[in-house]
Image 1 (cartoon, rainbow, N blue to C red):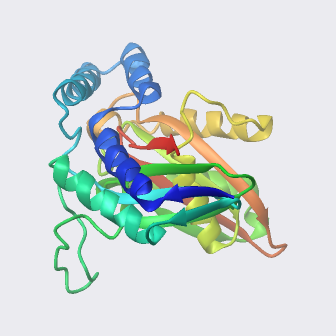
Image 2: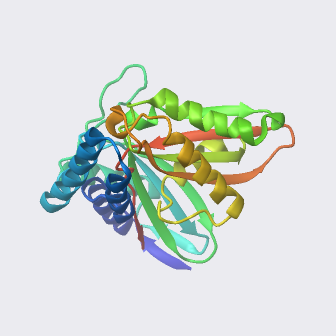
Length: 280
């Protein structure tokens, strides 16, 4: 049995909250540079150039890459041979978020109640997802999610007869309806299968797959490529001001489902789609 002290989890989450908000992931930065070469609109090129410059300033000065520093979404992969001591794991994670957002001068965007709307003033509580895995490893992924993009999420409970065309239609309709709101160029996470909540979770996790890493399944790789091509023909463009590059990548995750169902969830990430990870 491996023992991990709760204080180590707190320190790690604190650091990841700041790093995710300061440092644009290299795969996205390279995709933005490549997008500049493909973009035909001069306005679009100028916007992409500004986004890259903004990311470089944020990194150099350790400033938030976007004013919406998001609601902290935390994915924990915990080995079954790991025991946390010195505190409750959920308290440890939330304390890390609290410290990271305060120390990093990151905006607090969480309200205590969805209707009464009083700000918690420290960006807690986080949204925490746990996965028990084999062995004794312990990995934390912190993915701050802004709601300009989160509000564009879509969940459809399709019928099996809707098939692949129904899936394509759901994704394209979601992106089209989102328009400029999620700050394109976007990354599109898609979850297919499972149940209602499983599809939504897969769509969110799909945003964390590096966009330079192709889907290991050739069928779904082709579907990702087709959807990306069709999305980029919508003409929404960088910042929604028209152009060729509306999305940088479509990432699809799947899971077995019921014979009577075809759940499809779409979770859109903005041009920064923040996430950082650490193994303890």
